Image (cartoon, rainbow, N blue to C red; front, side):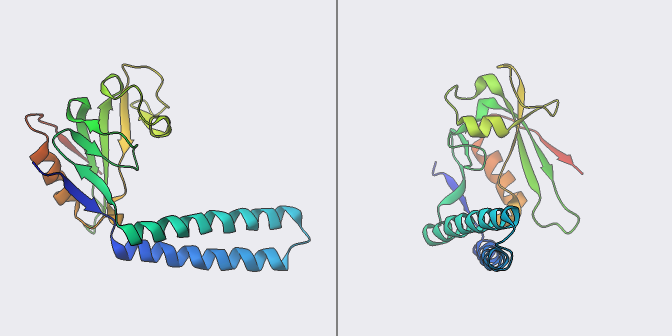
Length: 179
């Protein structure tokens, strides 16, 4: 079957780009006004570079519109988690949160560390949390992988969960609602 792709919401990227532009200006003004205090000017310079990088990254995402989440017969790919596909057999369950206003929410993939690709993106695996809340360290450990915040995606939480159910192919991955 064809993979299912979910893209960034254009308005969310545009909003984040506007905020980044305002923060760059604020950092530049602060840098110009308080250049005599080295720690303030250093912090302002760091903030300007950080928000400039965010602005460029979001601008590229807006121009190219690459998929943020790809769900296919092999598993789920989400650059927020890592560059590798998380295979269906590696997933134990999905924890889902839904805010009271029914927008956004979050999805957490609960995975078996041993079933993931051993050459997986080390940054994503380091960012994952073990079930006990600490960083993972054992091969047999359960990992909690946070997906891209759904408020940034041009789909509802139900759309993403339906796509997961449609592609999981025999893997009955339970969804646990939290909060």
